[in-house]
Amino acid sequence: MTDAILKEFEDAQAILKGHFKLSSGLHSDTYLQCARVLMDARRAERLCKLLADKVRASDIGQIDIVVAPAMGGVVVGYEMGRQLGVEGIFCERQDGQFAIRRGFSFPEGARVLMVEDVVTTGKSSLEAMECVKAHGGVIVGEASLVNRAGGKNPLPVPLVSLLELDVQSWTEDALPPHLQAIPAVKPGSRWLK
Image 1 (cartoon, helix red, strand yellow):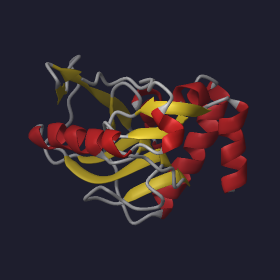
Image 2: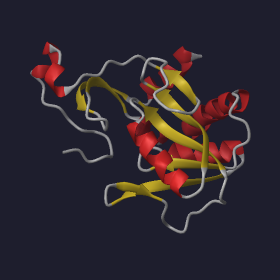
Image 3: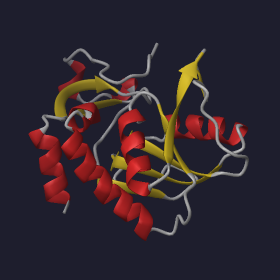
Image 4: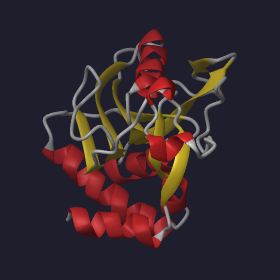
């Protein structure tokens, strides 16, 4: 199954090589541009159905609503809500913090599945989880298309991923020689200093 999922990413030209500065602030020579995978609604449906099936088979249990952090999680969050038969909303940054806006809400105590496109360090997910908790939601787990932390779970809740990759990343002061000579680009949606 991993090979078929990787082929979906390759067919979408979503696995980029170069020097990338990730949202976490780390650097990598590989970037997964999930927006390219999700731009084909049929591919998004196929991949999210597989991910939803994995979520159903996990020990996460009942899900009342899907919440995704904007920007990268919006499309996958919407499709996961559809696949799981629950509403899907997103939180977005306002003044540097995640906020629930646009009239979105959920009942106090709602069982929330966080959904991301890619998890590396979990920083964005943890920030979004704090936002959901502040609105009375209970995070029961997270689902992501890709966990690029080599199968490790950097989150305090169960993490269900469609694809698990061990993609190295480095701090700026520990770049390998092959990246030192290439200027870093920031392809993601979060602004970095």
